[in-house]
Image (cartoon, rainbow, N blue to C red):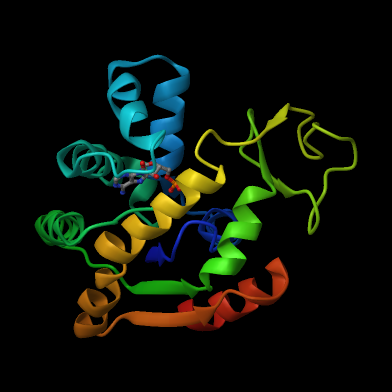
Length: 213
Ligand code: AMP
């Protein structure tokens, strides 16, 4: 099963991708996570990517396309994968199709998580993320049991550098301009499914499952 999760920042792509990964035992491939790890490691890729990430801009296409091409050819992707945060531009989507074509493969389903801008701002502004396992919490809707500590692994929670109002607004603009056109791209290919990303995480997950069945 080869899936893409589309949707604006804060739509819940990461949360739903983790749940799909656990259910179907296929890897979740998050370009955002890969880039954040590179930043943490102070790798050359991270130093370059940070300049774009901190201001809510997209990292150049050639950088992320290279990462994904390498990743989806790994053995653990043979039975499928979930792309979370990729593609984000038409060029990325075209290159992904080309690469899959060369591999004799295709994307089965693209799930678009639909949520409005007000909801996104409140979700992201109150979000904290575990620095160790990537688990996500929200000060109102999903607070951790102990302040600042991850319920799952005991790691430290922190607000993402790009989860401040100014950068969130920029990320939303970038989404509208560069990523939203992908809906039309995949609609034309006949594999776009739209899910309302409102309600509890479990409610949204059951809607997603309906779409990928
Ligand atoms: P995310 O965790 O998916 O919200 O991504 C965080 C940031 O990483 C984005 O705001 C971009 O700067 C960068 N990024 C992640 N995925 C991509 C992508 N597919 N193309 C370009 N930049 C990306």
